[in-house]
Length: 254
Image (cartoon, rainbow, N blue to C red; front, side, top):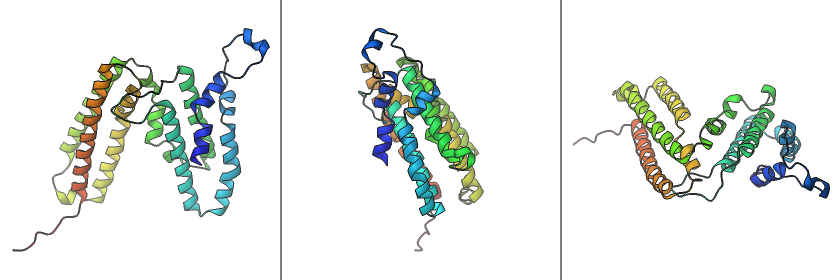
């Protein structure tokens, strides 16, 4: 499925939509094309046709839980592909990928909405909770950062890190030092909820990935430093979390 998804959702499709083939008579006419939502949706009609043909077959032949898992996978693939149209993967190196124009970004974000509506199927398909996952939220809000200049992006990233650090310190102060309390089911669920809320506020990765499309030595140095620091913090956080929930080992008797 993934290769076909990538074929239907790509920068090439955007280019064809914005610059359709024209005849000789149109060469000297107005070059700008006013796109409607229907034009934008029609550009990915092959993908909708594919879903119309195959999703019902899967629904009729798979166990309901397996079908739900397949639908979650499909949505995850769609979101990932759309995200990679907009920004490159996280890395400490600058990318050759060019930023989308305002019109191009608008098209991609509309595709995301159209596909979400299709798979939700007026409440009969994939639930909103699954569709509006963390990656979806990040993509939906990306226009807040996408057109900032390089200096603004760097400052926005640093501000974001300060806020996240303060929030993390507050959460640690609230946490009980009792090992028994830490393993209480209600407390675990609360911590997971707090972690989701923290992720909703953390735009750091999106900003760094956007910065990869910016040139200059200052950007190069900033990316290297901040990505390395981010990886260190992530590793430390994962170690602490695993330590908090790992089973207690009995102390051997002497």
